[in-house]
Image (cartoon, rainbow, N blue to C red; front, side, top):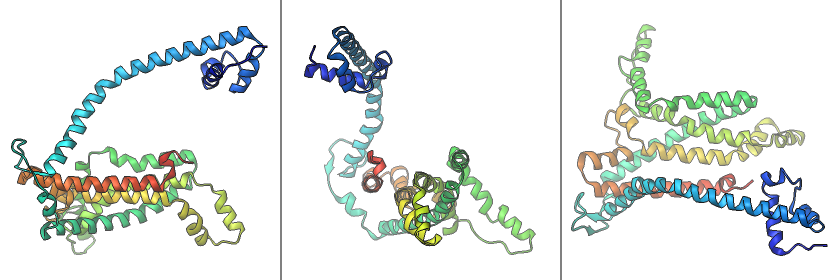
Length: 336
């Protein structure tokens, strides 16, 4: 009888995980292989040679893959990491856009707390909160209805929800201008019906409706994902225990969909407060949100240092929110 050493056992474990080897040698686990190898020296040698050969092939493939990836890593570093480092540098220095004779300071972050800029943050959080609440109500109802259909129908409906995001945001925003302007389609219809026209452009209403329609898919998709993977037998069990439909919804359905609700809420809120195109076009320039403030500092005012400080503050908030999302949804970390 030929014993199997610990080194050979490692190779057996490797072989058991490789379908291309097991396609020739029909063993499902390492233990099955070990039992076969204990009595057959020729098969033992053949299997171990196959494992070593395949391992060498994989190492060569990995080496080639690293060579292919290296240029992308270099360009990613140049186009992503370097600009981020410059933003960090500008946020803690003074002296305009020059990197010569820079002076480190914390004044850029202190400036954020001046009343004029705090008003921008308060307005941004207010409009962001309203946008998020409306998106949550509409998005949850839409996601719930979609989850009631068959799998094929769900895929089609989710595709329909995401189709508007394929269209350029500027085109979608200009479409809302044609709808909401004083001489737009909606007011023309009101006049045709004998009603007085309504001023909708350059108001909170126009900005919020533009943000809701633009960000609604980011609320629907994560909620639908949570609802779609939910075990519906739990709802049936709740009914069997005498729960009413409303109770079953709040105790089972909504509770199990909380990860999707939180993910959608965070995404919509962050995107709404950092948006600058929709508030600028639908708000007529009088609705300055955080995104508009950053744009003005970089493009109009030319104060890159202060603009970088605001950007850093927003980036930290986004990282914190992403961390919260991963904590709440175990699937993000590879959980069940």
